[in-house]
Length: 314
Image (cartoon, rainbow, N blue to C red):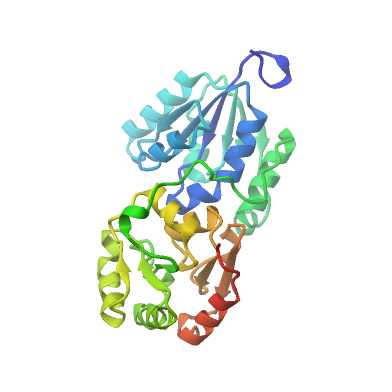
């Protein structure tokens, strides 16, 4: 079996350490790299929490887990992983100071071909305003020198699950009211989610609240305002979220990981963004961004009207 350019099966590494939502924003780049290196051994270095999903995708021959520590010992473990991999090429899609250091960890060499922002990389992808470029465009620019072209939307056909056990009759709408714990400024006020849930229920559309244990209080507040709401916080796996999204009437959510997952599987979803977020980094074939500079200026009537403008998911 030969790899790129017929020079034998190459060992190729992709680095992506970003959070849950970032993992799904990178799916089109992952798929494009896999196609380009169909005959090569492709490895992903990612967070331990994302490794099971990466393995489930079937896109990688091997998935390595980054220790994520800042200690000297953690960096030594990364160095051992990189050197043991004997990689011919590295695509650093994280491209941040931490992974720039991973390039330098290989000193005194030899170094593989390296695509990323590290000084000294063979294919340095650094230009003014890089972090402000939409994420898909950024990956497209980074991969272009290799003839790799990401699709406009990710293929998550591998991610699905039977959701009949939840007993939720159609039509239903997914509500994603949370955000990462350190970014409450990305949350549209929960009382407005409660009012939105009530308006949906009045139309015969069941509101279904998604999230983790962190969002349990938000879900309770929504259910208090709208008793018809179904609270699935802490009850869904990632494949089940994808399954619910595929069958939902529509969805609405803040700038948070589950919103990007629901968008990536192709659900019609309204993303609620204020200036605390960067709408250019949203992705999904049917995602529509509803943006106001401040959430104080984003009312329920406007959100409901924007949801009505979404084509039905099915």
